[in-house]
Length: 116
Image 1 (spheres, helix red, strand yellow):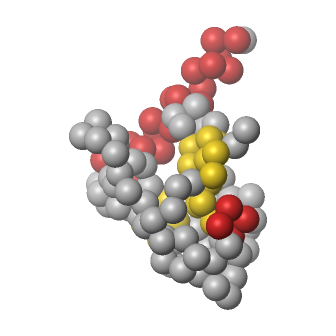
Image 2 (cartoon, rainbow, N blue to C red):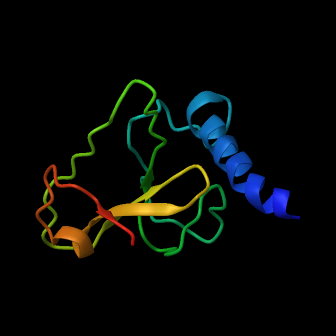
Image 3 (cartoon, helix red, strand yellow):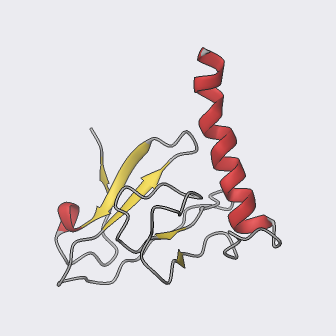
């Protein structure tokens, strides 16, 4: 059971990466890796191909390949609404975030806030 708990997140994250960025025939294919892809509508309960903790919010997502070096995430200033960008590792551990709680509405090229 411990091996399953350890390995399952990796398998699911790889499956998602494959469907979203590699398998062009998958109905959930979004396009290139390292580019943010936006859902053009709010998430609904029927959306099961990614976790949607708030089912009436729009979501954007991508996988980031760091093999060639760091990737800079630039977020434009957002003054009139709450938002968050969650950063996950391949084990689905949330290790940092950027957004309203971290920096208010003025983000620019700021550093993410790391969980402690």
